[in-house]
Image 1: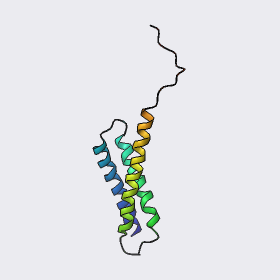
Image 2: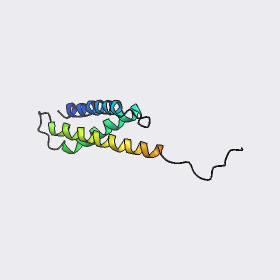
Image 3: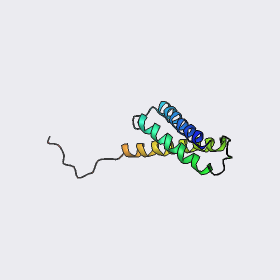
Image 4: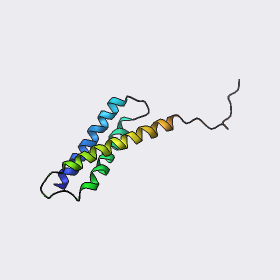
Length: 98
């Protein structure tokens, strides 16, 4: 069932990333970034509970933690992308002639 678990985490991460991109509607958060970070977060969130899986049974707890991991990664991604966009240019740039 491990393969089914991992595939469901990937699908969940893609879905959560798509929903996040739709709800955020922000010019700093890219659609591809939300899908990638959602998938990575879901995988990272689900991995700690692989050992607690019962052979032959689907692990719902790992699915829940993969959801939380995807949301956490997307939140951090949105914070990082906003911080990058708000950086000011260096002060030593030459000024344009008047």
